[in-house]
Amino acid sequence: MIPPRRHLPSLSGLLALEAVDRLGTATAAAAELNLTPGAISRALQEVEAQLGVTLLIRDRQRLRLTPAARGYVADARRALGVLGQAALRLRAGDGGQSLSLAILPAFGMHWLAPRLRDFRAAHPGVALTLTTRLRPFDMEAEGFDAAIHYGRADWPGAEHLLLMEEEVQAVCAPALLPASVSGPGDLLALPLLQIESRTGDWGRWFAAQGMAGQRPGGMLFDQFATMQQAAVHGLGVALLPTFLIAEEMAAGRLVPAWGGAVRAAGSYWLVWPKGVPLRPAMEAFRGWIAAQADVVGPEGLEPPTKAL
Image (tube, rainbow, N blue to C red; front, side, top):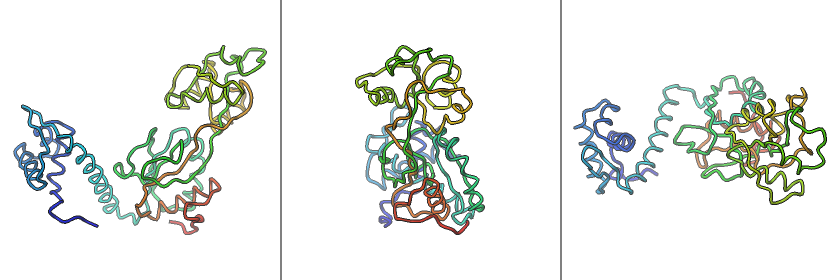
């Protein structure tokens, strides 16, 4: 339900307030919005008068938002993002046949991309956009229909569909491995490689091998692709998801350092904003990826058969 008109400031005032928050001065905001500094000042005064709240602290040449105003602008920025994306879709006239998806690079390259030809064949009318994101973000504000999430079913304000539980294996280049490895503890004498967002993985791996309490350090990487290549070239032992390393192991470029695959701490999920009506392309994608993952959607929906 839309609130009364008196609670809704003008769009020009919101744009001015959002720009001043980012840029710090009326002059910079005016340049970005193609207005005069005087027009920006008047728009800000009108917003403050309409809301009846002081939003800005005037400090010489700079403008600073009050603590209450910062929270308000954060909400307004998300709303402006939603409006902007809605306008783009309306102008494109896609009839719900575009899909914007945020993906994790390794999962997108090795699990999703090889399967997308099947989706395109079933739904040739869907215009698909894939963008890399490594950490959770506000899907509505950034205009994404859905995202691929690693971890638990804990993305705020989102619905979750389990795609795959992850298993990891300790692997290295053949030349790095000593001639005789008698147990998992021998790996502590070798250089270990790890992802900076998962520094507890080695501790969990050693615990799974019966060696609880280990917290080894190691060279840090921000993405699996880089760490995988470092392992191939002999820089250390890496814990890598099994779906990433099948080709490297089949070719002999990577070998097990000790033991088999173990269950990782997280899983892969498709997530999408809760309470937002699904457009046709998103419904089609959700049904398709549920079938690829051999699961049924949260409402028990089977994959749709109608092509978009």
